[in-house]
Length: 458
View 1: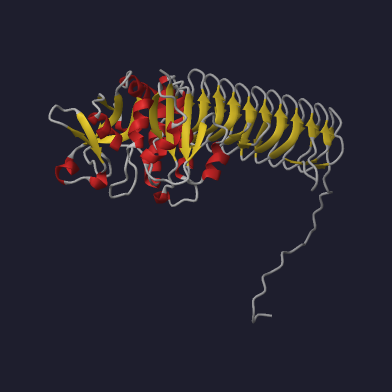
View 2: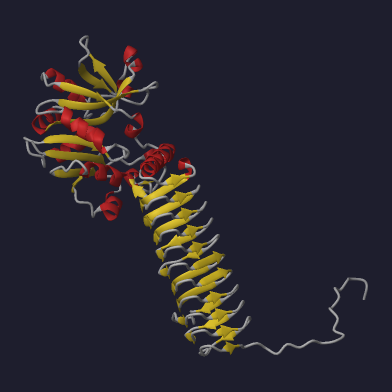
């Protein structure tokens, strides 16, 4: 019996007050809908059907690459109507699992258990018990404690309002049954919509077994209806990711102040301090330390390296036993060899920095090839842009660049060369030589500073 998964993702999300469709709102830097599809894929279904409608062009533009069957719902007439749009693409002998594009935290294990509970002919529901059930459909049971139906919140009357077992919306049933029940739905309710939940009463009337399973974690059933819900889900997701990384051996100074917005692979004995933000694909070697308030984006950090506080590293590679920061910025295509050092308030872009080389503070080095054991002093700038093109600066091994120098590219600094502080270098600096380009220093005796003019005292 094959499994087909239908994901309902056509809603507008008015309470988001956003031009972005609700299912594209970001959670951990990925759209809500992508989280749901990824969870669905872990079940290895024959097909995933995504029913979309509001913001169709935006949804397709953002997620059209997903390997799913896109089903367009022109009018949003309720959850039953939405599932009905996809059911024709599902064979009668399949099981159908219904998920929601705005319920992004469902665990694969919970979904797997729900599918298993549907067996060969049952209808499986996922329910939770809440202290405050308002806003949710209530689970109706008979005197034998069997599920006989669901009453939507706005349709509850009398004692029904106080039922605490509520519907999460997730269900799994056989396609042949679901197709029949959907064909019999009506919109005779306060919302004028075709409720998928009405299928539960039909199942009871048809003597189909209804299995209501409780979720072991209420948080994973959390739906996203507004920005407050989104913020809550973000913290839940981040704590889940932090826990998983700590289980792998990562030391987090405070797991509640950690944000992973991509993937993180770690070696042994790594430590991440507070307020670190990890984006894209980041790889840490063994014994890597990440200081507080750092941003790492699509980068690799080698063994025993230290990234000090308030450092931003993006699309860069850091070798082993390096030290970077504090307050440093490594821009794309920066590559540091082993034992290199980048100090405070240093910015690099598209450079290779050789083994043991140092750029200690207050410098910009871009479009450069720097050899081994080079020392670059404070305030050094590679003038790599002439207004039209980027040009390369090459610095040989063991060179020493004094403070406050400008290296005007394209220019070569020879092996072992020394550039005197305050020099502007526009021509090749020969190896093993001192190169200077300073104006002659003069002193003027008897010079006096001008005095400030005071009105009325000429």
